Amino acid sequence: MINITPAAQQHFQKLLATQDEGTGIRVFVVNPGSPHAECGVSYCPPDAVEKDDLKLEFEAFSAYIDEESEPYLEEAEIDFQTDDMGGQLTLRAPNAKVRKVPDDAPAIDRIRYILEAEINPQLASHGGRVTMSEFTDEGIVVLQFHDGCHGCGMADVTLKEGIEKTLLAKIPEVSGVKDITEHETGENPYY
Image 1: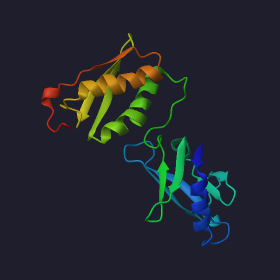
Image 2: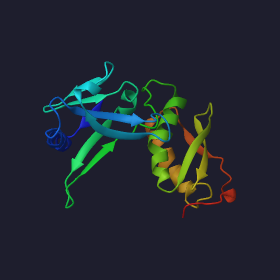
Image 3: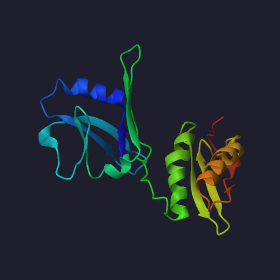
Image 4: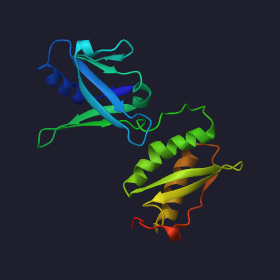
């Protein structure tokens, strides 16, 4: 479900030592399954525990996850790294914006999942994204580039070296990718 590293557990243990006895942490996702999903961690006093919460036991505390957030926190990790400024808590939740699909789901669902969970977060660093227009009977994933990727001179490299390699490696039904974007109409490409 969710991995809280030993360093993060020690950090939470120190923080919780200043709270009322029995207080744990709550890990949650606001707007789960949407592009605006955000993950968070807060204190969870005993009177805030809901009957449907998933309870995860750790050596010095308990973590609670609400029923709605639970599927979006699959494969999530909380870590704490010390630095010159004290330290930084990081929460990585690759499935917060899109719910993980099972390995035996239809190929089209697995393709959409990989595009949303892996490809688009990388493209977002350039202000871009990609959507699937079609998945053909021949196994070709037909894609449309948007925003910073629409008109970008590196779109072909991104398509073949990034997206196609990822999809071919992870989804056996995929035989290739095709870009149908009219890149010359892009207004704000990333360079």
